[in-house]
Length: 204
Image 1: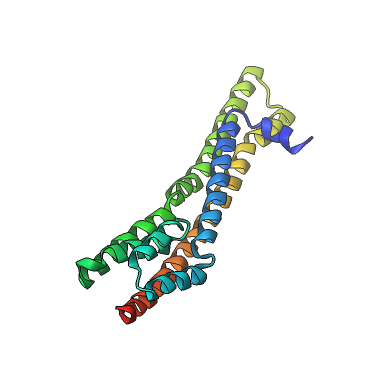
Image 2: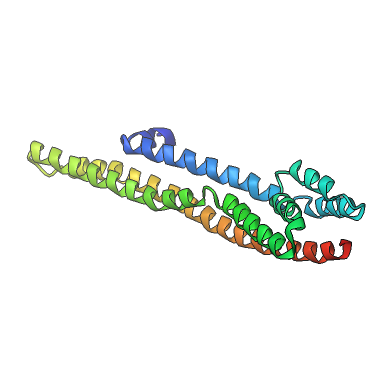
């Protein structure tokens, strides 16, 4: 008996778990790409920005940042430079606002991943309960306690629990992983922005 055949015996709720698992995989892959792009070649990007600033062209620096939307720090620096003419306090406030917005963008999808991690096992348990109720209703109709029939019905009912726990464990592992990545990226962004502000003062 193949794995697909066994899963199919779990009933309609296995389709729900299949949909949840597809959504979880999509979120995980999408977040992997997003986080990997967030800091890739960041140092080279900053070196280019410093080069434009050194030549005295803030507008060119902003335009360069806008052509690199894959870097969260690019949007933050662009907002910071755009507010530079309003004063140092306004520029720093713009930087903090932009940084919060970029961190929020990195968090996108993690709440949904957490929700899926919580509901997948519950869907599995629900499927098992429904399956058990069905088994005992059929036993009542038969009128005899057939151990083979009972055992067969129970293992089929437990399939959804296995499916739900599998999806839930997968989702919660990656949720925790991305939370740690988010904290690390946020810390590195903060350090890079501190260096950027210090460097910016030298060019002024």
